[in-house]
Image (cartoon, rainbow, N blue to C red):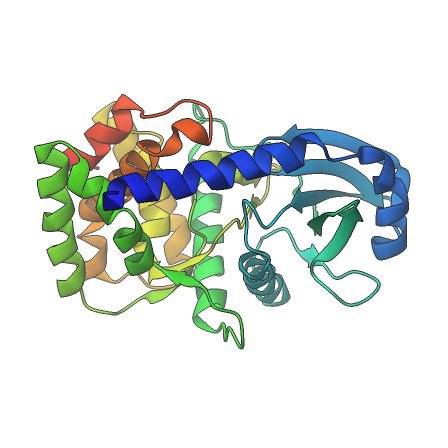
Length: 322
């Protein structure tokens, strides 16, 4: 079996396993579970999502929260623990993120047994407002978003992971190598070109990043941008977060893109200085993120939704100018 075939096979086994345990999850056990572990209102449970996680909205002490339920077949418990540990640090440092809540037993995750199946769950506070819309154009929204990214980064630079291991950008890059090797010639060449570029970059502004800083993961309430969904933080250059924030607006005109970039950057500068050399590499960081997304999408047929997206291939092959 080739490396690519092995990679795809392992992914498909993992997803099939998750779909099986997800579909037999019995929600009747949830009210007692959330009341026991988080003193939450069992009558307030509302199903929000049932895809790569099972997500419920509920109320605790009158405030809205979200419960995320998963299983080792799709997400490693230690990965979830590490993400919650980082998220808790950010909240304690005053970064605008959804804070994870420890259970009554002092844990970030709790286990829920149904027959022979063990699920695990964590609870986070709800973000005020609504997700930033892809058509948003108000400069103050992007300025607030840039400020929130910088606050997250400042807190991240002070983070000490303790026993929690987080992946690096280099781990992710190596994980998709089998897919890159089997891809079309242009993508394969771009993979090796960006690999050389990565290894030559100075290790400044290198810390734990959010990992998926797109507009749906940022909520705006008219005053503040709150960052949500810390699925898997990753060590890398902080500018990868900034690059991901820009990618979803690629279809706009050049003047609109420039105004958006300037607003994000102005907000960022309110909190921390900008490294001019690394900022100059922003088109490359965007291309890197696009390449990873394109390669992940080539394995995505068993996981989701849409499969490969043409715009992600364009992101991978063309530097985005702002």
